[in-house]
Length: 58
Image (cartoon, rainbow, N blue to C red; front, side, top):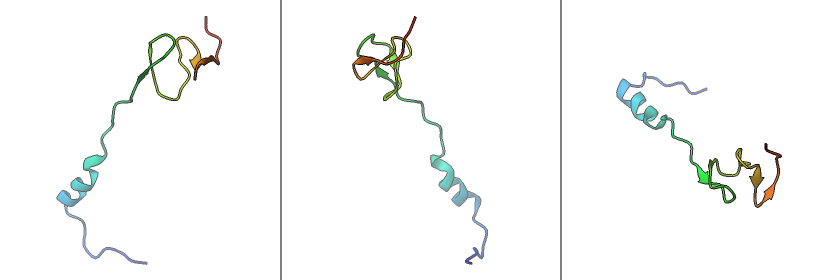
């Protein structure tokens, strides 16, 4: 099995990890109630998904 001969330098390791940041989740407006919801999820406010009610809400 191949094994690296030399240790990676700090700068090379940090360059590799430069894209490990956390991104904020994207939100879309619910077509029924206009509340912010995550895309491709049932709206937690009204219970609608893809134009029909899927979950009963109070």
